[in-house]
Length: 251
Image 1 (cartoon, one colour):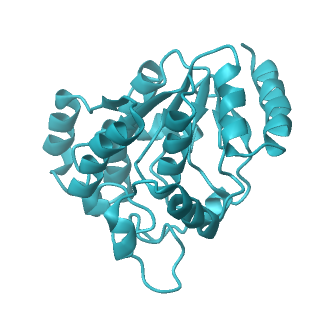
Image 2: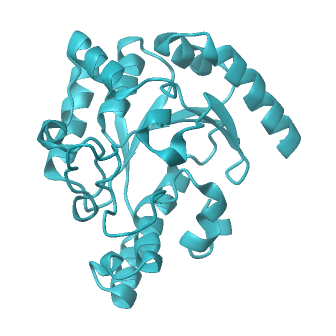
Image 3: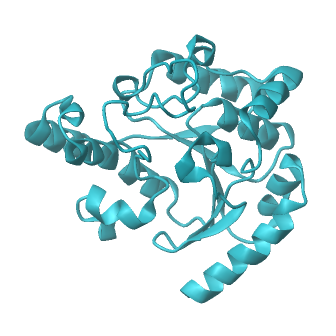
């Protein structure tokens, strides 16, 4: 598919999704021709999407990235979520050889020392497993929301991911955190207990802290870096080649 046709498809799909509720948005994508994959971090917004997929028995694959550095609470929630909704969450792990190479070059926790080292860690633990999870997919569903950070303020419902050759679907783009929490309470959706301890955004344990009152939702992610638009690269595909060695063969 050409870049032009991918962008045209994404634009048309964005317009259709805007007028639907969450269940309708996901059902529309599930009925389209082409494999749809939802990648969940087990965060509160992702749990809302998983609940909708499971409750409505939608033909959407659910996957997660088992980075090897997740909180115990996050790992436990995978099994609980599968049991609650009768679904399979496929786990994607980093390659042992990649981790060994990273540790040899930077050390186990070298990501604290430089942005380069942190990006390299995200590359082997998240981006390369993500590439395997999305292999052959035409639609990638995410839990991105406009209110999560300034870097995500213009998030559309559908957008062309040219580097990966697919369309990214963001069905919660217009939901704020208050709406998310109300929905979770009303539907009794299981969530990570860390959310009630001051962690609105949860990633790998060494790279996530609780936020302080008044801080943005994602302020606890890679907090030692100065860049206000910190990202791991999952949702900044144009940076993939600088984050993943040999990115062209990994994606």
